[in-house]
Image (tube, rainbow, N blue to C red; front, side, top):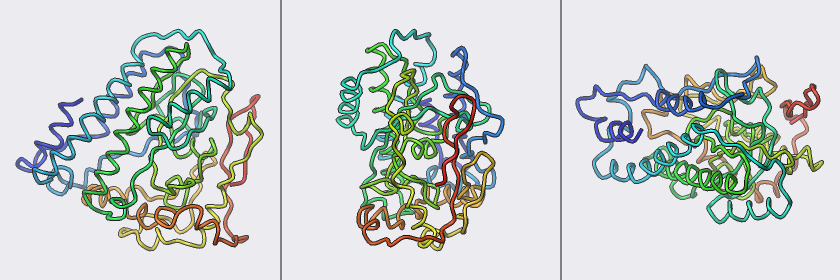
Length: 355
C-alpha cells in the first residue's frame, strides 16, 4: 500500500505514463472484509460507491501526479501515516475477534467520547446502519456505527482550488485514520467488536450516516454541514456490536440541523460558483430515499486536474461565516423542497422522516 502511495506521488510525473488507480487501492482495502463471517450486506436499492478514477484524465493532467518536489514531500508527510493507519485498520478485519460485551454503560460511553475528543474528534454520533447505506457489493462487520468528525482549518480551505487546500483535506483524512484506529483498539480492549471505517472510500455513505446520527445536515453540495465548523469537516465511522448506543431513535431526539437545507434552497452559492456546473439546482431522488446532489461525472475531471477542487466547500457560508451566524440571520424558507431520507429499519418496517 505504501509502495502504491510512493509511486503515485514520486513517480507520477516521470514521463507522464504512470497512472495509479485509487479505486484499485481502496478495493484492496475492502478485500479484508472477505475474512469476516456473516457480513451485513447491502439492500437491493443500495447504490455503488462513487468512483475516484477518471479514464478521461491523462497522467499529465493530474495535479497530484505532477507536484513540484517540495510539495511531493509535503504530501508524503500526510499520505504515509494516512495509508499506514488505513492498512493497520484493514488488518483488524483479518483475524476473528469474539466480543464479550454488547452493551455499554453511560459512564463508559462518556469515557469513550472524552477520549475521542482528546484524540481530535469534534463531534460523535451513533446510528444503527440501514442496509441501503451500505454500498453495492460491500458489507459491514457489525450493525451499529459510531460516527465522528474532524475539523479542517478555515484558512487553507478558503484557498481552493489549491495544493494548500488539498493538503488540509489530506491532513483531515490522516487524523481520521489515526482516531478511528485508536478508538477501535480501545473498544476491543473493553470487550466490544470494533472495526474502523476506511478514512478514504469506505463501504458506507458517511455523510448519510452522519445525518442519521444527528451530527448535521447534508447541504446542496453533498457535504455534511455541522455546528461550529460548517462544511469544514471530514467524517469517519467505527462499526461495533454495542446495541444500546444513544442513537436519535433510542433517545427520542430529532435532528435539529435539518433547517440547513431550507437555507441551501435560497443560497445556491455553491451551485453558482461550481466551475463545471456539477451541483444540481434541485437535488435529485437517488432511489433509496436519499438525494443526489452532484453530477459526479462532471465533477471528477476538474477535481483531478485542480488539486481536488474544494470550491463548493470554500464558498459555503457555513464554512466561513459559521453555523451559528447563519442560523441567527436565517428567517426560514417555507417554500424549500423537502426530502425524505429513510431511517434505519425497525421491526421489519422502514421509518421515513421528512428532511
